[in-house]
Length: 300
Image (cartoon, rainbow, N blue to C red; front, side, top):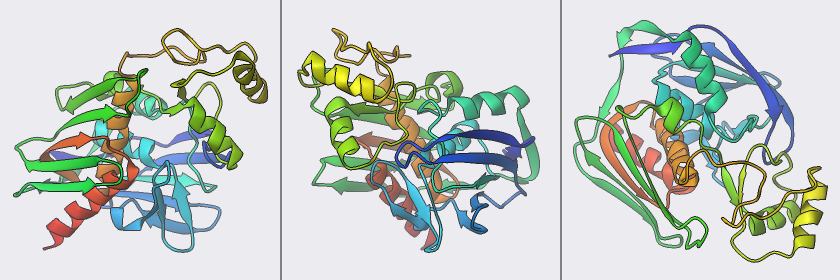
């Protein structure tokens, strides 16, 4: 398969989920063989979208060159991975990528409307010749990469939650990324929102960009107080255990979003894998550690 880039420039803007800063981004075509690069236009710094530049994975994936950083890159990277974009430039004028609706939907809809530009060079595939497994004992998370002719992913999400249950998600090239994965939004537990808000995080969060899971009983007045704070009075806890802010696209949307994140983080290895990935309780830390492990293997 030939490498592909974008056909034109795509512009987006909005708040960052964690910092609340408002930023503008432009996704632009890039030369063949150049990969994905993030450019902080306000600082004049370029950061390659590679695992060795990951410097923080606290609730998002952040890359840095030591002087500039860009956070919450995982949804854009997932859109590139799922749609088969080899080369692109992402210009951003602030420290965090806008959360938009909490998914990769708007990026994918923009690409799909125009199609992609095929380039002359062949796509670079990374063949995994031996199985690799990473485990994080503290979280119980693990990811296994096994040799395969084609790329595929199986994810199992288990938070010990009565609301979520155990959710499984699968993706390979026969599954339509745009309709089945890209539209799946990020999620958070209600008690986490309370804690993160007290820590000064999720400043850009609102009822339009996250699924909120209410795992533990919450008094109506507490929900009402939170709803007033975010400017959306009337929000309730549904019998299903979710806040009434949004309607789920799929019963297992949260599991599918974890797969969305994994695709974006693994793309930081710098190319496309020929491998099967099995992931249990994936998160940004183990995802990006896996991408680093792949880079190390390929450099041997």
